[in-house]
Length: 177
Image (cartoon, rainbow, N blue to C red):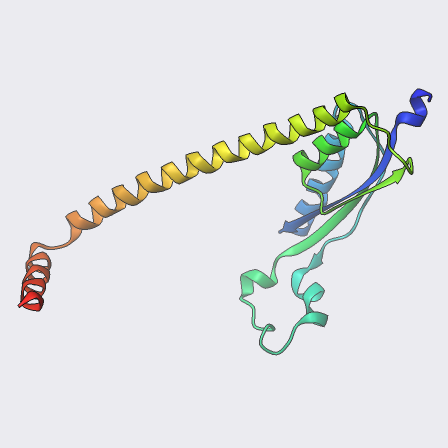
């Protein structure tokens, strides 16, 4: 098998949501540029679709109960880019998936991909490394949330007037009787 046969062609669909619409186009172009700069990845072709208002996109599906939206929701735009890439090996495609979180990935060629154990090990190790990173972030956020909740309780207790505290304690003692 030659080196060219080993390469994998795939299409990534990257979606974005936000405003203003010009920002979405610039963001998708920047993402496709960064994808092309990744190790072992070559962008073959890219198509950035024009942004559309979210309400325009959702109107055909909307029922009378879902047609009510706030002004802010109506001003959001959505767009997507179709990026055709050529990667040197499947690991690079997996890394693209984790790094850019495409809405869809389609492998165009080759029809069959042969993967030695070492290649499969690389993919599993990358997956494990990413999952550990996400778990670490989740733990940090949980700890910070608990700290903030405790600080908020202390602040709220200090702001509660003494009369309210006494009234509450009297109410509790009356309920016990």
